[in-house]
Amino acid sequence: MNHNIKIGVSSCLLGQEVRFDGGHKRSHYIDDTLGAYFEFVSYCPELAIGLGVPRPTIRLISRNGQVRLVDSKDDGIDHTELMIKHSRNQCEKYTDISGYLLKSKSPSCGMARINVYNEKNFPDKSGVGIFAYELMQRYPNLPVEEEGRLNDANLRENFIERVFTYYRWQSMINQGLSVNALMDFHKTHKFILLAHDEVTYRELGPMIAQVNPENLEKIAAEYISRLMQAMKKHATRKKHMNVLQHAMGYLKNDIDTDDKQELLDVLTQYRQGQVPLIVPLTLLRYHLRKHPQPYINDQHYMKPYPEELMLRNHV
Ligand code: SF4
Image (tube, rainbow, N blue to C red):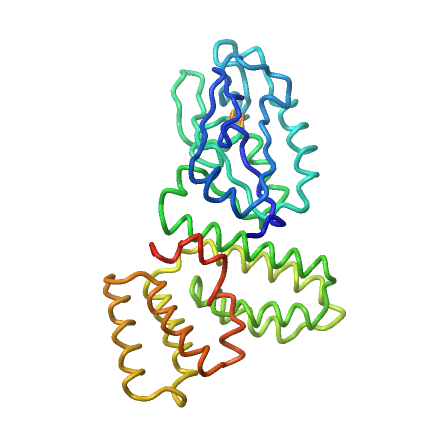
């Protein structure tokens, strides 16, 4: 358990009765499962701007090329400026959070595909909730996800892996950014990067090799931005296979023919979708315990987050 890791959450997802109708949208997975590993920082943007509970519903409209947040029944009641101001103030407090879980479909909290109504009252799903927009503008590298998407095993695994990676980055920065710290960070995240985006993996290596005290800040900023962007890409079975084979290469002189064949068989089963990622990884880790390879053992890919979350049992 690591309650040092803080995650922002839309209040209604934690069962707080803050919705317009006095209800909530408690997410069992977020509250019960993730709640055991993270400290939640909850916030309801609509409550924060003084809209009470219960309250009239609000929505996004498009007028004269501008998106506004207004009362659903009366366009003249406009909350846009107030919502932007409160959201910006709130986001300033979030320097130590490592991820954010937002309620979908909300004109305040939704991160994408929010209805925006035109003059003829037709909606299109081009909007972003105002608070969500301000959050993502202020912290472009912060892992952000919607609660509904966590039902997808791959998106869930991807979000949690990004949160832990971002947290390690924040911890490194808090301890003091240095050339060695940045190089070490990159070295231990190479496999994670390779599993998501081989092109970025090949580009960031040479970039990190050039780091020196003069360009450190600039390279660090570009590095974390590119790493977090790359990690949004889906780590497919094919990409994981590439990483696993790469890791296996380091064991080739230490394990005998039978063990090698067993590993290859398990890799084939994984490639064919017969077993989840945890199976080849567990076998690899078993051999790495017997024949330690510091470079591989230090890869966060081998243990990116607490095993009990069981995320790799489903991808
Ligand atoms: S504003 Fe956000 S936190 Fe508040 S009820 Fe709506 S979706 Fe939930």
